[in-house]
Image (cartoon, rainbow, N blue to C red; front, side, top):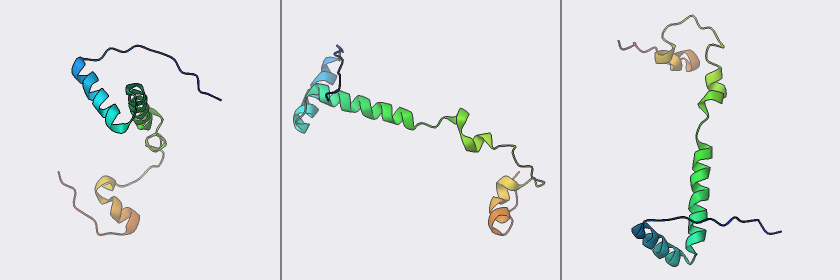
Length: 89
């Protein structure tokens, strides 16, 4: 089953278009295929960005109560028993 495609028209600055044509020729592809691939990569990158509002780790902040005030400096001590470090003020 073929994927339905939509036709669109895009205007490029002449220099950019020439660069696209050279790259497409070098890769043995059409300019349209190159643009589709680049668009797909761009959108994948956007989709990989972290959704901080829904990050489960950030939602856990405040979930546990800790009676120490140097946890950010001495987390290795509390987790693994490493020697305590002095906090820099």
